Structure formats: structure tokens, C-alpha cells
Length: 302
Image (cartoon, rainbow, N blue to C red; front, side):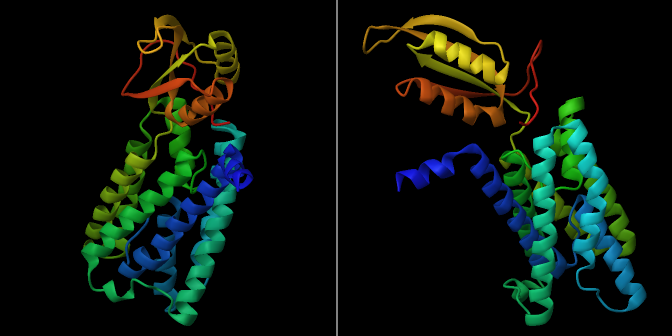
């Protein structure tokens, strides 16, 4: 049992699981909720929905697998941007998410079309509730994938690139892209659809901003007696500066050392893991930081 727990604590396993869970939640929201309410998702998925709507109007019938096909095609150039502009690891994980997204959406659409599988069908006339639920689940799905260092593909890759290279808020850039899709959806669909899509977008952005913490900052304070080993390991792994000062434990009256550093939030968990391996009795605290000034190494997602 302990071996299984340790296995799932490994970073690569948790990242892949986070990618799969986040992608599945996002796909369920798109097929079961957004399509049911005729709302549009953001980014590439939203563009694919708009194209699908136009094709259905022309042909008079839906084409099974059309949306998932376009999602895969439109993500190819974006993958190259993520590979060169963010990191290889991020791009590879995003490809995995895109592949899973293509499969999940195609499968869910097949089950919905052929067998009527959709637990939210009773809410078809409650547009407001559908838009809120759609925003909640799409934001949650994207947030989970991004939090572990992957994405749900599409404009998430571009938003991450802009956030990493230009220090522009991920949420703000994503919002501006989605607003453009909403404007187009008002012409392709109806004004009512556009309004409910806006509600879905606002809820999604709020949830995403709470769940997604990559490229925000935290101060990590580690109190330990293993000053030298801790300093060497952390600097070698993360390339962030560390401030060290001595302190006296009020309970033990022993001299200890406090190591303080500022990190990107996605790095904080690994700081804890390394520190606990070196000194299982160390004391660690995290403090959120809104902004920093001065020299700071923004490490790519590795």
C-alpha cells in the first residue's frame, strides 16, 4: 500500500493524472453542457464549434466527429509555438491533452448521438444554470491541466506563451481571445446565445484564475538545521537565489537556519518535496506574493 502511495506522489505520474482528469472534465462540459445549451467554449474548441454550426446550417445535419477533427487540426501550429516558446515538456503534455480531448469528445458525441447519454438533458430549458455549470466545469478542467504543467491545448498554449515571455496575465489574455469568439458567435448564433456564453466565460475565468497558479509567485520559508545541503540542492534544481539567516528555536533553544526564497507557484510543491527528503523535521511555510521587482529567474515548466 505504501508503495502505491509513493508511486502516485511522483511528479510525472501526478502530472499525467492531472492532465487526464482536467481534459476529461473539460470535454464533459463541452459535450454535455455547452453543446446542450448551444453555448460556445473558448479558444480552438469555440472556433471549432462555430465552424461546425456553419457546416450544419449548410448541410442540414450534424457530422459526427467534425468538431474533434478540427480541434486536432487547429492545434498543430499551436503545438509548435508551445514547443519552441514555452518548453518541450509543456508542449508534449499539451499534445497528450489534445489527443485525449479529440478522443473524449468524439466518444462522448457518439454516445450522446447514438444512445442519448447526457445526464444534463433535463436542464435543456434552463439556459442560465447551464451557462454557470458550463463555466464552472470548463474553468475547473483547464485549471487542473494548467496547474500540473500541461494545458487543454488551443489558446491555452498561446496564453501560456504570452504569460511566460511577456509577463501578461494568463487570464486577461485568455479573456480577450474568448471575447472575440463571443462577438462572432453573436452573428453565427443568436444574441441570446452570446449573452449566456458571456456568463459562461466569466464563471470559467473566475474558476480558472483560482485553480491555475502557474507564473504567480510565492515566498517559501524553510527552517532547518541542514543549511548547506538544503541550499546546494535547491539552487542546483531551481536556480533561484536564497536568503539565509540564523534563528533560535523557542521550544528547543537550538540554533537553526531559515532559508527564504521567492518561486513561481507551480514550483512550491517540489520545493517542499526536496526539503522534506533532506530534512524530514524541517518546518516550511508558503506566503502568496502579488508582484515582484528586480532580478528573478522565470524557469520554464520542466
